[in-house]
Length: 200
Image (cartoon, rainbow, N blue to C red; front, side):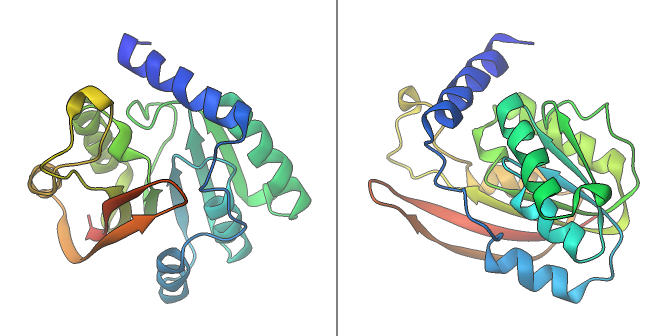
């Protein structure tokens, strides 16, 4: 594991250990629910699955799901929650990096990333994109939610989101169907964000 990935793993492991997981909701975001309602069930890839809320939701709607997260305790809890929900038969959770997806095999009909890729370096983002190109069948849908960088963000403060122009260039091999930009707010934070609907 490279140094950058190790540092990221340590940072997120600490967050899970301390319960600092504001993304821990029972259901996935409305954007995910709306998309799932429009698609026939198939095979799905949940990138940065955390405690498995999107994976469980997909499984409950007939999908076969591979959920990926590099934090072992997140995957352990995801397995527990999927078992409690009666959804584990349709889900395989994996401890691993979304930038090194050699341990899963496509083709997938859907990939969803709710706030994972924006924490990767540019090199890892390219590897992540290449993994999706390999794993998604032609015509598959890729839904991305990401923090977007502000011009005033200081790189020294750590990962601060994606440059939107660079993001669009990175996924040029895909077709961007729609993008919705906004602001994500919490008790002690506020940052630019966007939803991006792509087709492979």
